Length: 225
Length: 389
Ligand SMILES: Nc1ncnc2c1ncn2[C@@H]1O[C@H](COP(=O)(O)OP(=O)(O)OP(=O)(O)O)[C@@H](O)[C@H]1O
Ligand SMILES: [Mg+2]
Image 1 (cartoon, rainbow over the protein chains, first blue to last red):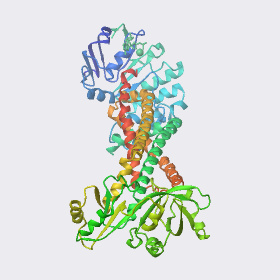
Image 2: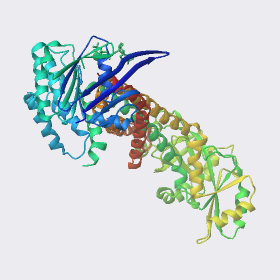
Image 3: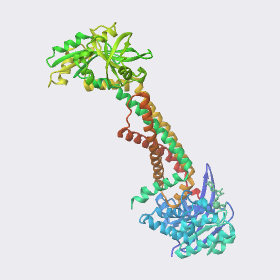
Image 4: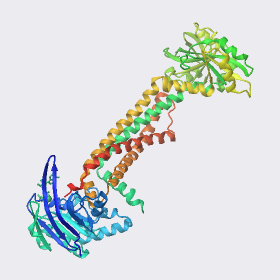
């Protein structure tokens, strides 16, 4: 079976005026269905850049990045939007919408897609919030929640659309040991249940235990892929 | 159901973001309200002006009206020879002609003896030039020496003329000439005159001793029943001297209205005020939408990363603009109604809030907000999903 994320010989540079800053150098890494891959590496090694390319948030032009069978190198906006819709994102800062309640925030993932009634959307959102242990905080807005609670809402938001891929960039960075461990454990359980693949970037060595595979990015080059 | 992601969803998010920050919402509403009231007042004054410009000519009864070509409007006429009007009698369709004399004169208020300017209309009472019942009924008395009929819709600065009249004080002076008030009619003020009186042609000459009955300000022509007004007008145009204008009733009203809205700077000033109100409102709404997008750019970038398209945010901005328009318009309308009543009581000019005016102002405010939205959406490109991780 072909990998769900198939990156081959990816090169990427930031262009700053005349100067090109190479960030990713000949990166090749396949990630299979249901796999949980953690990417670590020193600061500035290009991890975030890699995630944004795989998630269809940044355009790369050299190499091959196939996600869910679609080529993202030199892709159209439509293809990128398509990939974004099938991907769940968990950001370092929770990035919840301040004006919406937890339930409404989670429901935003479902609002893009047609074919669901408002009632169905809210039910799914509630179910997902229960699954992350936030069933009693449905109608709280982000500034009425703790950091760990917000991150759990944001996990619910990423997973409620049943994405095939979850991308997370240092999801535990703003959390203490206990709530960080809790968050990734929930993430792992839900991903395993739905068969989603996870690519998670972290400096946090305490959570490496959830991974099926750990890769290290150093100065734009993959070690032990 | 299809409409949900297309319009309802961004509109709902726009609404939720609006009500989340209530202080900012209040500021935004105040901005739109301000523009709204400004536009309502400007349009109200302008319409009152237009309406009042034609109050006197609307009461005239005649088929064709002669004025000197150099007359800009009835309140500042250039006289022409009475003979010119008489020549119109040569046309077979013309039944009768009568001159109308117009002049601004100083009216001495009965109690305080202060002199105030009003408009005097002089004509042969039997000609019944004004289509007003009291004037017609008093045509015998008007033929007496020194009698006038006073417009009780004149400004209150002329004093409580009606009460004084009922108390028996009917005598005062116009242009230092003693006159008797014999009755009242209702006309209303205009930008040209704060008050009006009607008198006979002979009395008019007594009040304006320098005037000559052979020099008239306006000529009123009545046709035989069934005669064609347009045809007679065309014929007279050829026969009469080229220095007179011939108007039909509708043309006369248009001519008077046009003077105030176009020739006189007043119409321009109100038009200018309306545009300024809209521009100020535009700038305020634009500022609010612009900073709103800037403040929400992380949230928008997050939604973009989740797969929301650019067009969703464009609709969200326009929905915000629409809500601001409606939320500002409603209190703006209520406040304006109050201010219209206040202005009416101060100016003694009718200022009706008509449905069409409400719709006009709403459309102005709506387009103002949409234009602001159109200008603000370029700020959306700052919401870049690549910056989200
Ligand atoms: N928008 C940008 N424009 C130019 N250079 C950038 C941009 N974003 C990142 N870089 C540079 O690219 C390199 C890789 O950055 P990246 O954010 O991918 O590192 P990282 O591995 O995620 O680091 P960290 O662990 O600190 O988050 C860095 O040298 C950074 O300075
Ligand atoms: Mg990073």
